Image (cartoon, one colour):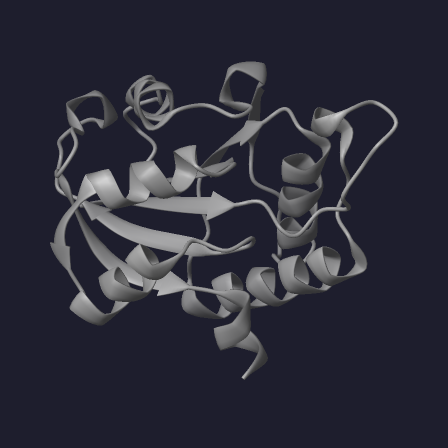
Length: 171
């Protein structure tokens, strides 16, 4: 079984001199990324590879997650994932190496939320309801993928195991 971790970047500042792609994380975003990194470590949710949008806020989110893990994870930073649609994100996942069993994608809304919703055909109904109500910054969808290879993953082809938000981790 494969696992797919879909993460929306942590909370960013409103403006940056270099435009939207250069927006960095806010103080709140840095704190929440650290909380999520610790949660992922304690739950054994460590990817073997992370596909990451080229924006400053996604790269910073991943760096803060990995600071909580015993070893870094290989990153594939892709400009094409910046503000990508669900279909574009699915194509990037499909190109992931078949030997990777746990893959993380770090991106932006609405694409990352649309992808998570469109991929899940079943799973935890409470988690799915929470995810449908909103996909806030630094939210993580954990999906189980029965496909033999990443390229075989299609919409409605995964099960939602969990949906984690910063407010849950703060509680």
